[in-house]
Image (cartoon, rainbow, N blue to C red; front, side):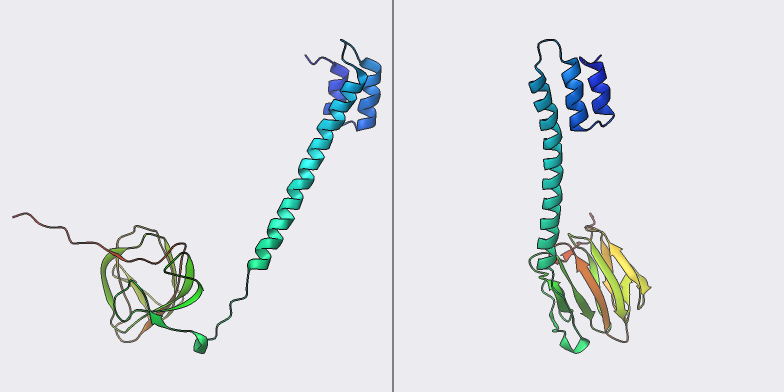
Amino acid sequence: MPLFPRLHRFVLAGADILTTAACIETISANSISTTFMLEFFVMKRSTFFIGMLLGALLLVVTTQASAQKEKKTLFAPDDLKWEQLKGAPPGVMSAALRGDQTKGGYEGFTKFPAGFKSPMHYHTYATKIIVIKGAYTHNGKKYGPGSYLYIPGGDKHETAGAEDSESIFYIEQQGPFDLIPVEAAKTNK
């Protein structure tokens, strides 16, 4: 049971500060001063509103800061700079769009030469792929242009491109690119 039942009902009902103050004036008891009670409720409500205001201000500031860091990324096909993909087999090329695939998360295009095949391997980070040209073969299943693949980090797989033409696909990872070969199981004689 609350110390001041009628006051408790006023506060829970959302009575404003003036109504709460009038209520305190009429039912103060048990040696708690009217001034103390009024200060307590005003302070509690003020703290709540100040907290809400600071939270809203923080949200606006962080949203503006992140918006200022974003830059447009626009590339025409002729503007792409193709380079050998570090850590990948020879002939696999990469064109970075955002980020640095050697240091952290990135987005870009990868190009396999005609007939490319990669033995069983895995990547530390999940990989998102959209096939643009040719094909992307994952564990024996061929995916053509417009196909989407999500390959979780640690998933062991073999990959290949189209047999008769180069294959180009969009790739995105949340961490640096790596290709970790899976050694064939050794047999005991």
